[in-house]
Image 1 (cartoon, each protein chain N blue to C red):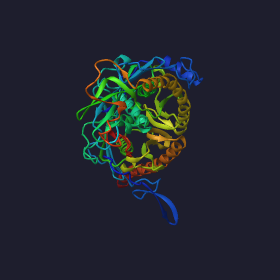
Image 2 (image 1 turned 120 degrees about the vertical axis):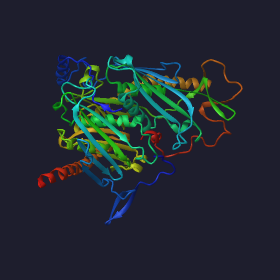
Image 3 (image 1 turned 90 degrees about the vertical axis):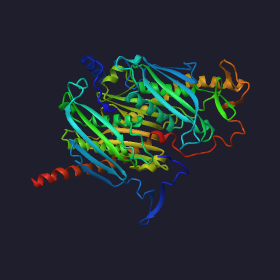
Length: 252
Length: 332
């Protein structure tokens, strides 16, 4: 992820269908996400799993549990505890990443867990433990938001009762323009990068970070843009779950 | 290291929880404050004389000390024209019965990283001015934040302490011996350049009420906190949602408005306590050029004043503009 040399032009004005529009370095419009692919139940050993791709970003989430908390002192009498790990594979980045957990991954594991806690009905499983592990297989920006999208699907696939799914996407300011779903190049040069995740039906924000500088107006616009992307991802998430479970129903 | 739901929680009698909640419903806090009122904020700049810069921050009973130390290092390959800023934070076991000794846990790492991002993204420290020889040697600025007593709202105290310690920081002397640069720790030759001021206002949601600066008891029952860093020009310089709860869009809007509003109060305290201290130091440097700490001054070596290299060493130091997000390559 070494950035060197001149900053490339990331936003261009072009004429499309007789209209002047802003186009990003990969041809997307400012409010356009990369192609999203979602597959549920990709790991046979896990109780629940999901593979999520946002363009070149590819993550796999697995859920094990609810199961007995081990060691036992690590349990709560009135609800389950969540154990969460966000991890990037050494080969997922341009330059090899150390397989050991970095400070960034420690922080993101916490951020991810705290984004899932509001939607998991942990009070149904006192003294239990639910493991949520996310592996970033390939990284091209937006890995934490793809991770949360995948993690909530893996929980749903495991049959863990949820108040809602969680969908995440990043918004950012690139070349002074607000854009949706930044890829790695955009992220590297962004003036601001704001990952957001929501439980859309509850209309609640469960993950919010911002790295950069935004005015109040820009922030409001960015949050709305994120919400737009999140609603689209939410639709794809539900579609992916139906694809797996509705089909079984028809065959049976 | 995995992130685990905190299972060891502070003991909090239900009665107290109810008292806090029922008071909040009336718009009053357990210690008599209003919902959007800080406890008394006090900053002591230069608290640790051995450090290049330091500050002790007290918000109510919460105590955080930050120290700035500097040394020389090779710059990161992707930012050859920038100095290095390293932020570290630790919750000391003396701070609370619920903090265990050991390496920084996820809370400490998160705290360090949100402070780091807020400072870095606003370019609080002009890292391009900390270059001695591009690609070869630069100043490395360490900011270590120590939580000494945890009575709630450590994030804002820590952010304030880091900012104050940087503002209070003095550049040590620099000497060249042959081809090697060395730090001359017997004297200070100027102030660390600080371009901007950033403070944070963390908003906690307790029983659906938004409050600022919770004490430990209030913080224990808060289910979500939103860290909001605000720059001196009222822009948002960093955000982080923390805790197991969630926020609605309306709550986020309200929280940010409160934060922007209250940031002025913290910036005032910062100016009053640390801005003046910095101005005094500046006067001393303007008059005497240096502050001698003691020990044997270097007489044989070439003394380089104000962190700038000797003329012959390199041209245009610190003037090469590179559009890089400093330090990103390490962690992002």
